[in-house]
Image 1 (cartoon, rainbow, N blue to C red):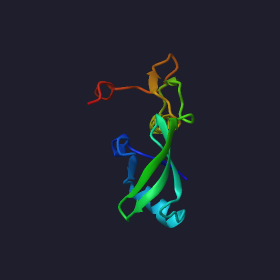
Image 2: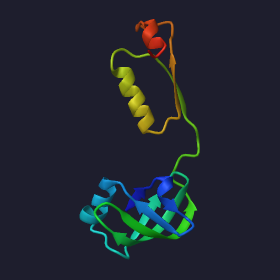
Image 3: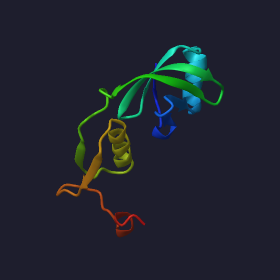
Image 4: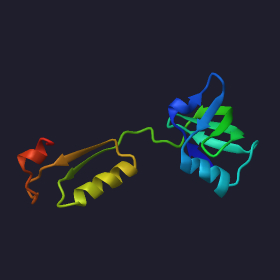
Length: 126
């Protein structure tokens, strides 16, 4: 099982990582039924940690780091998307989906054929 950990929960000096997310703790204990001594792979966006579970409670799972490698699965490229402004909620949906797939920046373009009229309040973000 792979878990995404917050950097502030990784203590490399002591070689421990705390998993505090309720959903992750539930999956570790009740879905995958992992126990103390079982192995777990943890990523933080930069590194990949191979760990063993040392403590389990309802609120958190503590693991000991066995091995640390550079995360080879995360994207090493920046993706920028420039797209024409869409009508209604389609723009919100497009932004949501683009962020889900890892796009770094979205540049809205007011092209010659854009139908949407942007009023000054929305344009300035107020």
